[in-house]
Length: 155
Image (cartoon, rainbow, N blue to C red; front, side, top):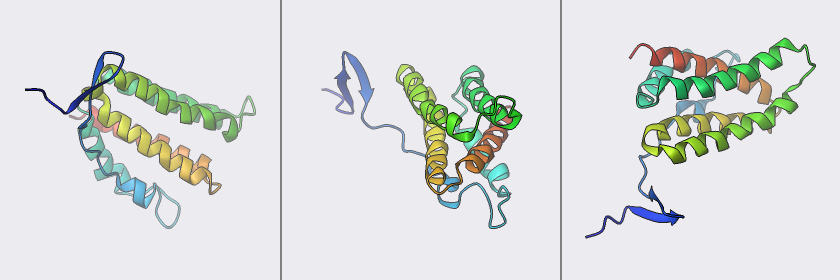
């Protein structure tokens, strides 16, 4: 009688307890760069294109909102006019997780893949930050995200 895959655990809102399986991201295992420290070729070609295809349900406005936020942070780091360093930007990167979670709560089916992608990217930045490579990883993620956005327009 009842569909047990849904739980009413948030003040009257129904959530799917059997979400879409998370996409496995190669960059979570291989990182963003090759052995020489350059962006991996597959990352900005096949991997970016696959991720873009998985984001087909995300509106252009929603995708651009998160991309523009990442790009603005990268620009702040590059401009150095305000002498900001990565440690000042780093918490803002982590906050993106809460922002995508908030939006995903409103429209989980459409935004789940974007959430998973951003979480995986930020998790990689966090992992590398602990190894002293946070800034480089963030910059590589920003370039990669730009590539993914570019591929979404070729659908």
